[in-house]
Image (cartoon, rainbow, N blue to C red; front, side, top):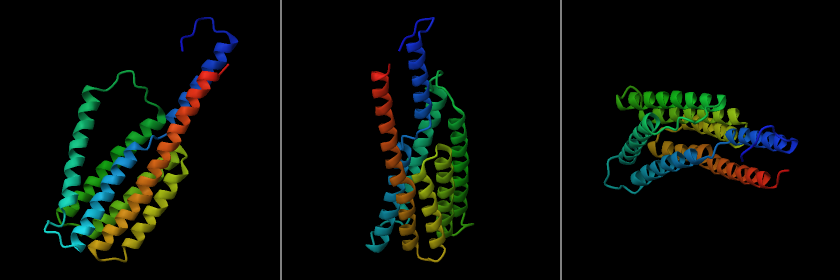
Length: 212
C-alpha cells in the first residue's frame, strides 16, 4: 500500500499492522525445505532397506549415492543462485542470519561425518547414528528460534531414535530407525510448519483487506 505524508491516524494504524504482520511472517518457516529433504532421506532409507530385504541386485549404497548426487547438484544450484541471482533488496533479519549460520554449521558437520564414513574411519551404522543425533540438534535449534513446538518434539524423537540405534547392529534396523527419525523430525514438522505458514499468510492478507 502507498502512503502519503503526513500520515493520517488511519494510515499510521494500518502501517503498524502491516509491520507487525511482516515480522510475524518472518518468524515462520514455510517447511518446504524440511519436506523436500525429509522425503529424500526417507526414500533413501526405505529403498536401501527394501533392497537388502528383497535381495535386489544393486550395490548396498546405491540409493545413498543417488541422494548424494542430488545433494551436490542442489548445493551447486544454491551457491550459483546466492552469488549471481540474489535479490539485493532482500532483508536479512537477525533470526534469518542465525538460521543461515546454523545451516552452514549443520552442512559442514554432516559432510564431515559422511567423509569419515567413506574413509572407513567410522562404521556405517555409527555414522548414521551420529547423523540422526545431528538432525536432532539442528531441528531443536530451528524449533527454539521460531518457537515452533513440532520441531522441538521432532528433535526429541530423533535423539530417542539415535539412542535406540545404539542397540542395533544390523544395517537394516539402522535404516528403519533412520526412516522413523526423518519422518517425525523432518516430514511431519515440515508439513505442520507449511500449514501454519499458509494459515498466517491468509490471515495477514485478510487482515490487510479489512483493516481500518
